[in-house]
Amino acid sequence: MSVKVHPLAQRADVNLDASDVEAAYRSAEDAVRGCGFTVKSRCSGDNKEVLMLLVEGMTCASCVGRVERGILSIPGVENADVSLATGRARVSLDPSISGIRIVVETLGDMGYPSRPAPEVR
Picture 1 (cartoon, rainbow, N blue to C red):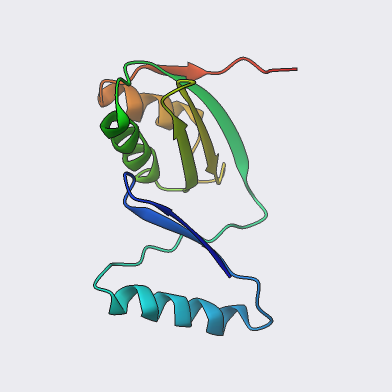
Picture 2 (picture 1 turned 90 degrees about the vertical axis):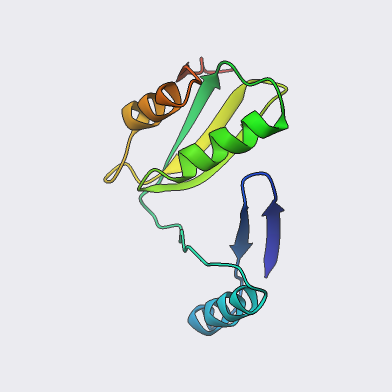
């Protein structure tokens, strides 16, 4: 098992590599709840799309946290990694539930205009 904690986004990504994934998940979930935190599962499936966005208006680490939390609040979003240095957001989502339009609209409503990032070759 590996854990990546994102304090500003108030989340942790837990990757389970166990033979009994269901038991490992329950164990990790119990441990997190035992520490007084809530658990919101965002299990990755096969149906995933990765978006790269340019996000404007971020000036500090608090902005990054707000943008990540805003993106993660969208149904179907599995992961969001936001960089203040590059002004980019990498968003993994289930395209049958959500898409780029709702992500861009959500960020715009929060005061962070965004658009698809050009592909880097």
